[in-house]
Structures are given as structure tokens and as C-alpha cells.
Image 1 (cartoon, rainbow, N blue to C red):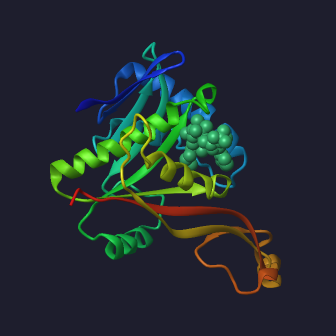
Image 2 (image 1 turned 30 degrees about the horizontal axis):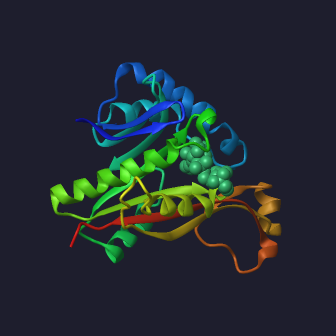
Length: 241
Ligand SMILES: CC(C)(COP(=O)(O)OP(=O)(O)OC[C@H]1O[C@@H](n2cnc3c(N)ncnc32)[C@H](O)[C@@H]1OP(=O)(O)O)[C@@H](O)C(=O)NCCC(=O)NCCS
């Protein structure tokens, strides 16, 4: 499967977005460099690393269960990358119970997906690249729903540094414009995880300043210090009625 989803004129020529389950060999190096340079600023502002490690990148690249959406510029150089895990089996960085509870409540029969990465090269920030990538993926979800007769429920998470901006950005990209038909979606924030420093006397005496990942915070805010937050969302794309 290697399908062009979108082609659009830009100031510098043309941009296209292609989805595949297997990446062309020559894209690997530029995509890895994009992850490293594109996430550098966000990683420096987040407690937990927001980008994947090289072995995770290789796994995603090689896995047919991971959809790879690549935006190419006029010269066919990759300038944007979005990965989506089809099914939750390979998604090992999240609390699956929270995600599955949400699925049971919102749309138990929907096909589940999880966004792994969304990044563009720093030099194309603020251009049509990121909107085109997101719109192409939404179109692909809509078309897949039509083919399978099933709704899609796609999860993602983001660091505090991108909250609540990222969800608003995706919501905005789904709306119709002059050259985009618009895809009806529902985005819902489903949970938060905290990186919190335990400040109880007992903990400080026993273990020092330990930072732990927790789902709920103690009632008394004197007993902890929130170092960072990770926010979890679902995007529902329903099949046409
Ligand atoms: C996420 C990403 C792909 C979006 O692409 P982009 O080209 O920056 O998107 P846009 O420029 O269209 O952003 C839209 C607006 O949001 C703003 N914005 C971007 N990141 C923001 C943030 N973290 N917080 C608040 N606003 C932000 C932009 O300045 C822009 O504002 P403007 O329209 O008023 O100029 C890109 O910023 C990126 O690669 N970021 C690093 C990786 C990342 O954060 N990935 C998200 C998954 S955790």
C-alpha cells in the first residue's frame, strides 16, 4: 500500500502527502533527522522525552501495523511525518486500561488507532505542511471508514508544552476551507498523567527527591510538586450515516 492522499500547490512549488505501511529506503535518514531536529525544542521543555528512540523508529518503520504519512516537498524530500498505529497492540507507552475504558464508553465497535509521532522539519513550521499532513490523514480515516463500514477512534497524547494547543490545532484542521472539504470529528480529553515530585517528609527522608508518574494527585498540594503533565485524547471519526 502506497497511496497519495493529497497534492497541493505551495509558495515553493508543490506539496504531496503519501500514506504507506512500508517506507521507501531513501526516506529513512531524512525522517530520522526530522525527528531529532523537530523535537529538540519540545524535548528540552518536557520532563519525559516526547520523541521516539531510534529503535522505536526502526520498529515503526518496519511494522506493517504502523501507518506512515509522509509530506514531500517539490523535490520529493520528506518535510513532515505522522505515524499512526493501527490497533493498540504495539502501543506500550500508555495506560491501556484508560484507553480501553474510553473506547468502551465512546465507541466500542470502532477500529482503534494511536498516533505515535507528528513532526515537521523546523524550516517548514508555520507553512501548509502540518495542516496538509493532518488533513490528509483525516481524509484517509474517512475513506477507510467507508471501505470497512466501521468508525475510527484515534488516540493521542501530548506534553504540557503542547496543551491545550495541539488538540485545538487538530480540531481547526478538520474544519472545511476553500480547498478542503472538512471531516467531522469529535476530540475529547480523556485523562492526564502527572510527573510529580513526592514532598512528604517520609518520602524525602527515605528516598530523596523522587519524581514519579501518577494518575491522581494527593489532596494536599504541599505534599507534591508537579514537574510535568501528559494529556491524553481521543479523536472520533464516524462513518457516514
Ligand atoms: C506540531 C507541528 C507539526 C505543527 O506544525 P506547525 O507548522 O508548527 O503548525 P502551525 O504553524 O500551523 O501552528 C499553528 C499555530 O500554533 C502555534 N503553535 C505551534 N506550536 C505551539 C505550542 N506548542 N503552543 C502554542 N502554540 C503553538 C504556531 O505558532 C501557529 O500560530 P499562528 O497560526 O498564530 O502563527 C510542529 O510544530 C512540530 O513539528 N512540533 C514539534 C513536534 C511536536 O510538538 N509534535 C506534536 C506531538 S507531541
